[in-house]
Length: 242
Image 1 (cartoon, rainbow, N blue to C red):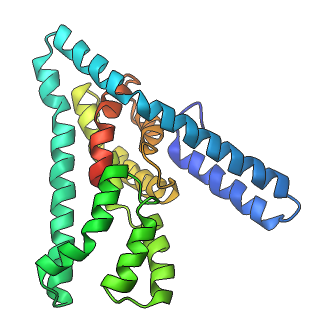
Image 2: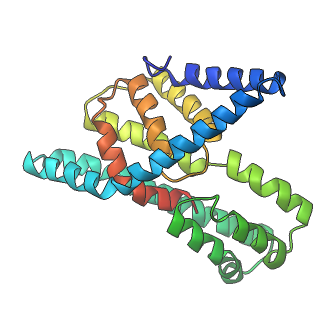
């Protein structure tokens, strides 16, 4: 499954293994601790990779410019442009819908939510914005404490529409850029896989890059497309998080 890049099989193995570990607790406490440490190690490695992104951006764009690939450059910028439209559109819809249904002035709602948005944009991590988000919901929005304790962690884990936009949009744009045909059945499978990966991925910056590796292999997109995705990940991550 890992060698072929079959994301659904990898997710199934992960769920099956996790279920077995939980079923055998506390006999598998050592295995659980090993998984926790391995996860921390991978996150640390990703943090260092993210620091190298400016260099990757320069190399990727320099390669395009050196080869005089104007058409390719046009195709590359479709990805961040579509993502900006999706993120801004979804954010505007959410704010307007909340303002209308809860009968709260839009300006007041934006002012109260602004601290959470600022932290989310500056850190690209919903975990970093968690504490301020809880404080805002309790004191500024007047939401009950029990609902906040359940709703925010559940929402940050399961409600990731922009991550789904980013993965599907990235795959389709890179498929177009590299001339890879995507059939309707592949598109349906892609959307299903991305939905599952969005639930499974931890809320840390740059984590979706590792998911693109599996998705590209599944669709037959060249591995070099990862460099293009990484080049824009730092920008897009700061849009999808808030």
